[in-house]
Image (cartoon, rainbow, N blue to C red):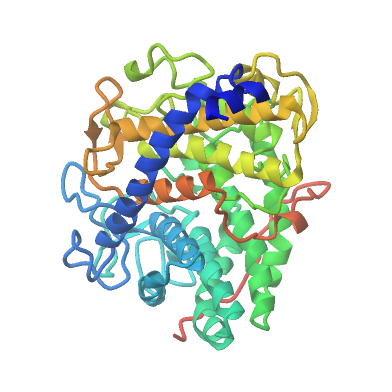
Length: 485
């Protein structure tokens, strides 16, 4: 029997899957090649051997080779943590050649943590300094500082590798080398989480959803890691519940508010990134942690994506059931405000995460909160719970997969012919803009591709840390800072 005959018999031709299959096969082929391009490009941007970053010290992740218009030839703690977490996950899935790069990064962070800078020194706030020169010296120019997501993201990356060390018999390395560095970052998070700072876009000084979400995750997995190395993290245990309690205040009832203390609408890809970077493959569709498949996160996905439909010319003509190019936030004026590769990929990745979670739990739920999201993709969607054995489940899942793939197809269409990804692409002509070969863009491609293939990271312990306490308190806790390495 031919594929089309089989599809006709099963009733799937009517759902449109037959026309989708060739598109998916083409996207499969591009992604297979692009993943190789992205991995190589990331390594090209890491010192000391990176082909594009001559002069960068060993283990230093450079944001971009671009040195002017814009000058991104620095290392950001946030970007570096996210990139190295991506490489650690690849390593844990069999890419053993990445081991030296990860080790060099950890060695470099032992130096970077101790650099006195405009935000302070190791024990007085310096870990919140956003960026450093690539020769591991302080950047002393004017900047939006502090940025409090970096220590949490760096801790998450190092914890992931530390857990691998323990699982493979290198507990002493995890205990003596990795844990002291992680402990510094966890101490910073517990001490400063309730103080304002600049958001991940380095523009708004306030409280950011992305920052708070990744801080909660870091303290939860940090406590578990501490136990694994025969230690403890009392400041993690006391502050994680308070952070989760505060995280609930970002929910507006319709979408996730990206930042407090901002004059903007608050619709922002910050929230998509917060959801995917706190995704736990063992979690359910929990609203409290805004898991990718949760009603809140899905409703927010629609609000954020829809906010870009009418402001970019390249999005003209697409229906609400089709993917569009996604930027940072609709009021953006940087480079005149354009779509970003990493934001468009984040929109896809959240949906791939959700597909994984639905498949794992064997059902999906449509609630009053998420109904608009589902109806945009499957017009007859109605509130209820649908078993994976049902026709409705199959139809919805297929529609979500097609929607997700649409975002990646947009990235494909605007990537350079050699696979190069910059920071942005033009909202009118789709041509690449701003910093060339942005390291974070490549990491976003790799994580989206992995989730599309149901390759997921290790659990961070969400299932034991998703219950919200009765009332929130504006607290902090003192941890331990150490520069003994």
